[in-house]
Amino acid sequence: MWLNGHEWAKRQAARAGFSFTALGNGFASCDEPRQLQAICDRFGPADVQAFFDRWTTVIPTPFTAADRAAGYWWELSMRQVEVSRTLVFDQPRRARAFFEALVADNIDIGRPEQLAVVFARQVRKTTREPFRTRVFSAGDDVKLDVGYKHSRLKQYLKDGRALRVEAVINKPADLGVLARLEHLPELIAKARRVNKRLLMIERAGQSCAIGSALFERIHQPYTREGQRTGALRFGDQRAMALAGALCTTLHAVTGFSNKSLRGHVAGLLGREYSPSQMSYDLRRLRLHGLIQRRPHSNRYFLTAEGIRVAVFYSKLQNRLLRPLLAADKPPAPLELRRALTTLEHAVSDRIQNARLAPATA
Image (cartoon, rainbow, N blue to C red; front, side, top):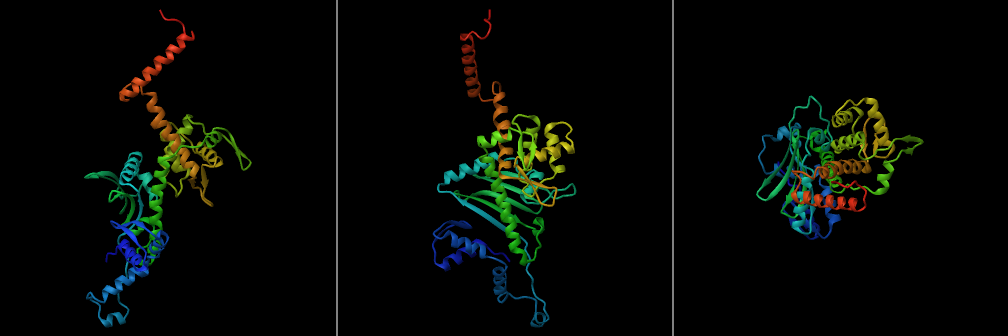
């Protein structure tokens, strides 16, 4: 049995008497958005069961009346559940520009260690299921397709004017949910969190600039809860490796441990990095308010400030400063190299006029 929840919601909205503009498998606009959301939230196992029961009175079944009297009958389970979030833009060109910027900025999403967290599941050495991330073009449409075990996460433009994030759960066990129909609300809630995580990550990546107050605070030793901790200065090798490692586990809203984060930091440092050093850095991050510890566990998760600091540090170094420092030679764009040459000549002339440098023969 296949049931389209969007079409069900459209019929319920029409029956309720408020107008809406339909979008392919969704809604483009609605006069009563709160009531429409209430209809969507109301959809549950009882509606699916009622749909099934209605059709079983029409379609022949192998069960006789005696079988039914003895208690034999069908029991529904979930084979595939799709839960989507659709963001409609006022102009199609803005939708496409925004989505293409997201794809360009998040092209590396889907590495196993990252993808595990988007779906809030751990990836172990014994995990054999494939992981895949594809950014592909079908005609003029760009799509992002991320796979995890039997399930996947899709992001694409719908009808050229809406950004859709869609979690496709082909096996409820991938999210730690049982497959019987009664567990549909739990699966929907977890799938919605999957969609929310992706949007949260992309939002942080698109706008990660931090205010001067936060920047100055983490650049100084800090006292919190009666404890004093060291600074996290931009440019410091260990601080930058720590920020890069936190970006790798940015999706880990389910948390990370000393051990899981330590391997990433050591890889970025390119040298030995001990558990005690990791413990010290976790303490620094916690006292600066960049991470929080889960109660009664040894796992941590990033705060909103922690997400922004980690992404800001990494992007500022890797995407701005490092390319600019090497911008005087190819493959830097010719226009940038010419501008830097002009700037260099102007600075040299100023130094000569100020007689700060020895005259050359």
